[in-house]
Length: 169
Image (cartoon, rainbow, N blue to C red; front, side, top):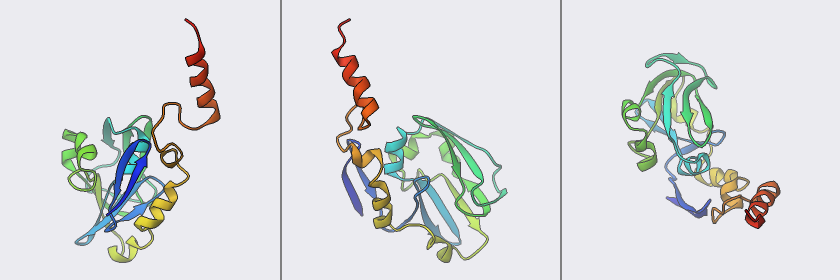
């Protein structure tokens, strides 16, 4: 298990037994013939959590790679795309309680599984390993603002927050 001790003010885990779709912060793990996907802890921190989630395709539907399969309300609005083509199956518990994603993102909080159109073990190799995923996070707000300071690290945000602080109301 890899850890980042200070990532936007939080300690996050990155399991080394998974692969990562860095574009959207999804983890991937082979289970039987399927590949299971969920949101990684660093992705959840960067998103500002998960408030609601809705499926955009039907359970058991055939989907194409890069097709949007879920609509998430986080700190922003996010469309989650499928990293692979195949038949999609959703985690039914998530619709009842999106808090599962935050409480156990690498376990019970998985989002969807795909029965891929190819051999799952080979398909997994196209995704980043844990070390490469951590490297990809180096340019994010999480690493640039390890303490999680309000206003972040952008010059504009700092100027706005400094200006607000200096105002006399």
